[in-house]
Length: 239
Image (cartoon, rainbow, N blue to C red; front, side, top):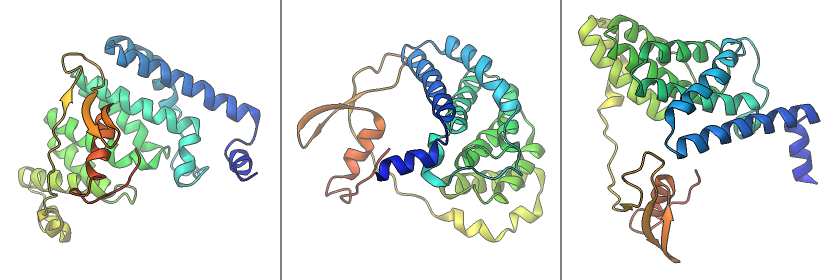
């Protein structure tokens, strides 16, 4: 009974459910194309399907439909994930200006706020690569005023803002109170594993040993397995 109640609170009609399933099917096509190593086709599909949606993204004034975890069952959440992949592919093809147009439009809306830190960081890096240092500094200022820019993304943007501030002589940033926050360096753990498909242009699979013996895992599963060991803290997590 509880699961049905949750489902009905996410999908208010059969039309809503069908729209979500259609978008999931589109995302699966992209994933399969990328797994096959065909980035050119994946980018072509994404530009055809995603760019029209981005142009009509929900404005900032529109309230969020769901909170927290439930947002991942919204079609726009899946499209935002696809748009992020599109940004990465554009950058890989050195189309930084096109990637910036996409990022700017995503940030102008309210869809998938959890991704705003990632989008701002990519925008800042691209602007810096294009030599637009003042624009990059302005993007840093906007990002640091955004309450959805958190944790690692905020720390990364603060560090970039400080480096940019020295070049563009942004004295306010150089004297910001948060300067002390970026002194801390996160510890680095090195995990040894063998990539089984290291020569292929596809998502890497690794061979490691778990409680049930040898296993083939993704890099995310490899990290979870590492931190679940007693030596690494016996952490439990999901990806």
